[in-house]
Length: 113
Image (cartoon, rainbow, N blue to C red; front, side):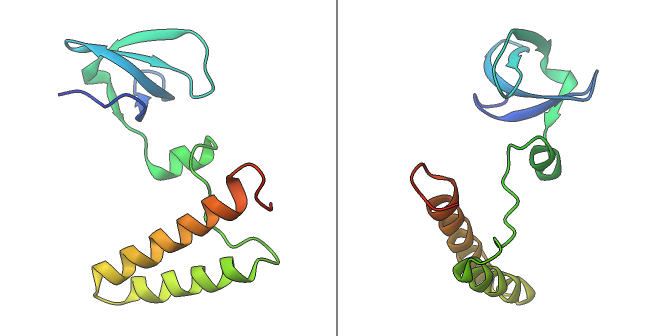
């Protein structure tokens, strides 16, 4: 088993977050998320990076409502409310709606910030 290309992992030998760029057998090629020199490690020393680790590294947007964005606040409240219930589909749909708005309105080139 290996990680797919593009996955963010942690090299547990040094606690360093990296992105998978390839694999061969039991070895995985990595590079820093912003680019740079690649290195190779045994598969066994890797683990998937957690959401918190990706957020700290700037690789996962914190989906907090932007000050002044009414739609962010509305979607965030709807997502929190849906997460309280027992309908996984409704909670998932609310999270997708929140992330889609964030991506379209606040991260794509030309979108408001």
